Image (cartoon, rainbow, N blue to C red):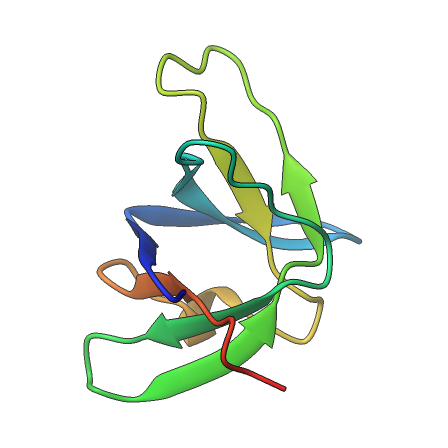
Length: 93
């Protein structure tokens, strides 16, 4: 089932690794996310970006238990602007 995971508030570029978006995913119930899981990013301009999870990062402090998503290296900060919605994409083949 596809669901809205989070709305990007900010992005940070980590040299040699890629771009992370915050606040990140707060898993529901027994939900589990893995590297390679497909994501769909709905940008404020109405366009959609299909991508995947390159890495999952745990940050502290982390009162909401969010898991921060790192996007693949070919994604830049400008590709995922603040206000973009990040959706799970379980329908992708």
